[in-house]
Length: 230
Image: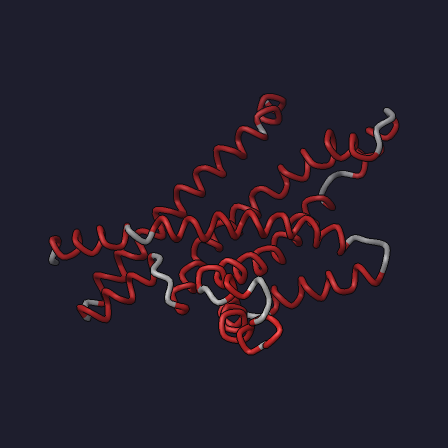
């Protein structure tokens, strides 16, 4: 095995990590904000609000992310009204198309995670809080949201890991994140095994760090439960 070659391509692939993390962070942040709005709409009592929100969730969860990226990057440019609008300078850039596609995709999954986490809050806890006079925002801030976060965090950690891996699809619209650099190196050298093995190791390391960070956060949030069991 040519360790000198592996060292060289490893250093080149490291240059793609900032873009990979940037795509992940911006998409997760925008997706989470949008997911909160979508989740509120899905649980609305009004069918005119709930119907489109439910359709949105099913659309982005039921179609491949690769297809969504293609439709946004190549399809939006076919709409003349968009090409003449103020948002076209952003939509014609591969970077913002990737961010938009990733954000919309993760928002649909995150909305379902939020909905499941809120539904997992024991009804007895809510009734007990209401009997103490809590309601509205106070009930949500002190009872529903803290419990929902503890229930939803393990699932959301998987979504974050999925998003890190999903950024690899941005390479198909010319972005040079980790996978984009990997494809370029593979086409230049034809040493596919070493190159893709190194790329896989980088993704594995990134996701291991994320997993450990969420594990620490979970232990912190559930520390009072461990003390009670002890």
